[in-house]
Structure formats: C-alpha cells, structure tokens
Length: 426
Image (cartoon, rainbow, N blue to C red; front, top):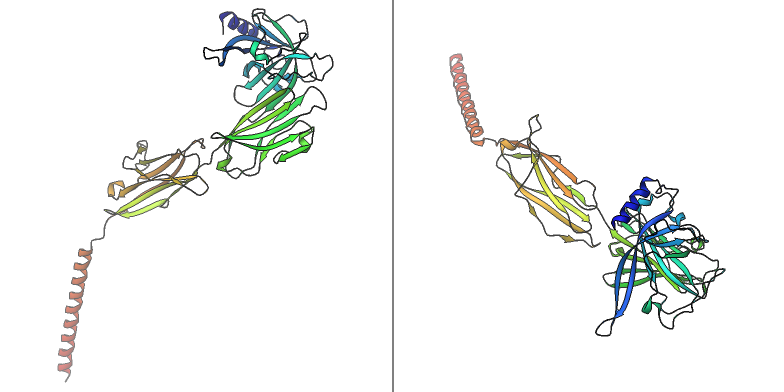
C-alpha cells in the first residue's frame, strides 16, 4: 500500500476506529479488470490491484479516505457486519472484484430496484483461516443494459469515486480449511442469505479432486427438486446448507464447493478437506531387553496406519541416567523399510537397527521417535538394555569333573574301609 494509505491506517488505529463494536470501514484491495483483444484476436484480462475502502454508513456519507476508491455499503436487509461479529478488524482481509452477469440482466426484486445494476463481490477472510465470506454488492445504474456482456467494456472507476451499494446476497463458511481423521463424521459449514423473501435459490455441493468434479447434492427451491444427500432440508430453510460426511475416508480428501445461485448471481465458497491420521507406534521388544554379551538382536520400531505418507523415524541412545549423563544422541546405523500401503490407503514404515550386546552398553536407554504432520509432538517408545556376562561352561565342566572324581575316590575309600572292618570282625 502507498505511504499515504499506510499513514492513514496507522492514524485510524491510534484513534480507536478499529474497536470490535465500531468497525466503520476496512482497507481493501480492489482487483479491477481490463479486458482487451490481443494480437491474435483472443480476449485477455489484465488484473489491476487498486487501493480501496469498504465503508459502512448511509447514502451521502463523506468518505473516510477521500484519496481512495470507496465502496459505501448502506443499510439493507442484510448486515454484513453481523457475519464478522466479535472479530477484530485487523484480523480481516478484504478483497473486492467486479462481477459480470455474463449478459443476463434481470431486475433485482427489491423495493426501488432499477432494471440494471452494476455488481461487485466482496470477499472477507479471517487472517487465521476461521471463515470466508463472499457477499454481492449491488449498485443501481440508471442507464439501460449494454447489448453485450458487461465485461467487454467495464465502466471506468476513478481513484476517488464513491460507489454507493447494498448487500444483496451473502455466503459464508466457518470451515474453509478442515483437517479430519479417518472414520469420523465431518460437517462442512455453508450458510447463505438473500435480501428478499421467496428468493428462487439453487444450492449445489461439488467435490473436486485431481481434476475430477463430482456433484454431491443439489436443491432447487423453485421446483423443490433434490438430488443427492448430506444436507438437512429443515436447516436449509434458515439458510444453513452445510454438508455432512457420514464417515471420512482417504478418498474424502479434496476441495468441496458450496455454490448458491439466485439469477443473475452465482456465488461459491471453497472448503479444503485434508485427511490426517496419526501413526500407531510400537517396538518389537518390551520396556526392558536382556541380552548376553556378544549376542545380536534386530530392534524394530514400527509406525503403522498413518496418512499422509511423509513420516520421520529417528532412533536415539542415552547412557544410564546420572547427573552428568549427556543428551540423547541419534543412532547412525538405522535402516528404513519401504513404505507399505495398507488396504485402507494408509501407510506403514519401520526403522530398525542391529544391536550387538556389550557390557559397556548395559543400562543404556534406546528411544524411537516418530514425527508426522498430524502430531503436535513426536510419539516416543523406549526400552532399557541389560547385558549379562556369558556363562563359562568349561569352568563348570572342570568343577563338575573334579566333584565326580572326589565322590568316586570317597566311595572307593569307604568301600575299602568297610571291607577291612568286616574282615577283622570275622
């Protein structure tokens, strides 16, 4: 933004204009269009970013910034501020666009409406992704409609122009980006409202993924015809067109589009659904592992049934717990298996190493750490190594042989003594 505009915003912030209950205006970008024919006689559109103000008030109000284009929203049945209630103004990102009816000119059925209107869309996004609002701003126009689609020759808007408008239709989602686990019910929020009763509304839900577009639901209020499921028609009467997934699967991922149309307007909000399933982590040994010095054992840490695919497995070792024990250090001789895709399209991976038992390693603690985007902190599993000295079988054999020899000698001596005593007795 320009220096003057930045200073103006700073001044307004200092003056307290940005209070939650006193949002009188918002700084916006007006994405203007210039449509022309290129050298190949093909239609091209050049987008022009311009500074603008979205101002709330009454017809005839002076612009808060006379140096910028002002979109003055006057009172109608729809109050746009109602949809951002409780939100700090600096948390809102505002974007304005021209809207073409593609040559369809229909009198908007409200009191005092003209036969022809200029239309604009206003998109408000929460800076932390909590919601997206698309509203249609109607600007009455006295001139008759052009004989061709309006985008061929947009009427120019000077830099200091004040455009007096009213809100004609609003679409909002409180779930513009959703992360869901597997086999859970998930609601995708979509709400709408129109500035007149009995509007002939058509609502549709589509899912788009990898270039494929699938219709999930449609309802036409004029005909009463419904196709598909997932939207409650009772709530629909109050403007709630939310779509519910009964049980999420990997194939549920994609962009869900809630579209609302009232001739000649067509609006939509996009909802990005991403599946995130945390891994189940396990070791092939218990909390304590006993080995005889010199023995070798394969130690496996398994991360199972996670999604998406990227996962990190790191093994650490730590000397026996003492005051001067160093921090855990990562093992270097760790091998990773191939990613295994399970039947439910989740993945599994194992990280393993071969442990050669040594007496100097007895008491060491080995820890497997698994990181995944579904986890706030890594999952860890540990075991303690206990190493025993090998048994000296040769020593045992020698001692046993000596004992047997001594028993044999003792037995011979006792037998000889018994015979001598028996001979004297005779």
